[in-house]
Image 1 (cartoon, protein in one colour):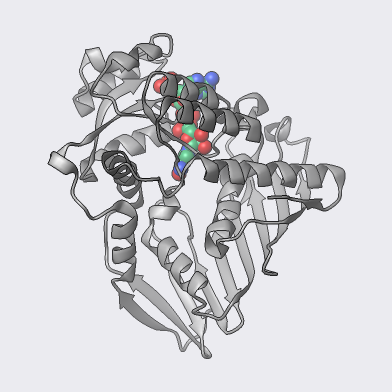
Image 2: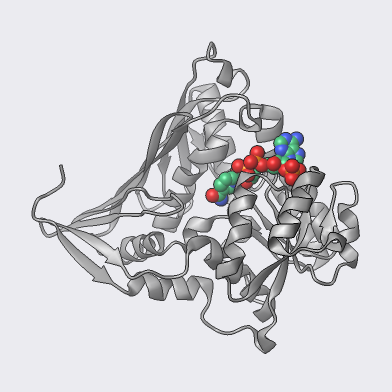
Length: 364
Ligand code: NDP
């Protein structure tokens, strides 16, 4: 049970922060940036429904290997047949002036190929997390977008979620004193028979899928890059789900200021929580990075308060609008390709540490 002396505080700070992330200024001339969605799976289905909440973004094209989905979602969202593409004719999207952004929502191992093809077709790219299955693929993607003069953003939606933004603000300003420890646990019980459990398509197990939230959160809560990684993996290889990918991986990250983060990534147990502990108290979010339902508790001066924010634009629409505004105003995305690359470099070090049973030092 939590501290019974907790109080509830309602604040508009998160809404203000969300405005800063999602952008408050109007699109010049009211133009809305057109998005093509590539890969019409479960997450794409959610994303497509969020354009209705956007101020600066609209859905203009669909790319899929399943003609039935192209017809069904085309009908639902008013995307004409001329703006529906297969993977084979995807490159002709270069001739479609209604498409400004290609949003890649494919299995992880396909992110690099479609990001590079989109950039070569002259489109800006939003790519889902994990950015790719290796840091070298991430670099190739960044270079392809730079060479094409196009922007690249990674789908780290939590950066547009008001409670996460408030947590970042409080933690980095030292509201509970300088941060000493961060714990961040993410996991769920993976269903069998899906591409996530096939290393060739996923690039890895829980860490590439849900554990990346633990890692990304400790990086954004501290604002620092880890310099040392220690990890332990625990996987039952007799479980048919885990023939080629890991189940649980627990890792410790050390940061330059002395902060330590302990993180869990799991495909066999449910977790969605982080806590930032400073010298004077702590800040906790649970669920921390879910689509909705965040609850925040802040402990300081011997008291625990629940923080409640006034409702604002959701994180998905905030993310879509933010990238649209970056294009309209020629500004840098809050979460560019370099953010995805930074996570992949740490992920590779985590895997290496678990494999070799030793600490790995990360250089800048
Ligand atoms: P799904 O399996 O639901 O969808 C993936 C889609 O990719 C398929 O439906 C299919 O669409 C297309 N596809 C193309 N080639 C293949 C292939 N060889 N095997 C399987 N599918 C293929 O996955 P999700 O939507 O859950 O995940 C997609 C991406 O989005 C992943 O990178 C994941 O990490 C990310 N994601 C991010 C979330 C977030 O909160 N930011 C949440 C969930 C996922 P089609 O039939 O149209 O070709």
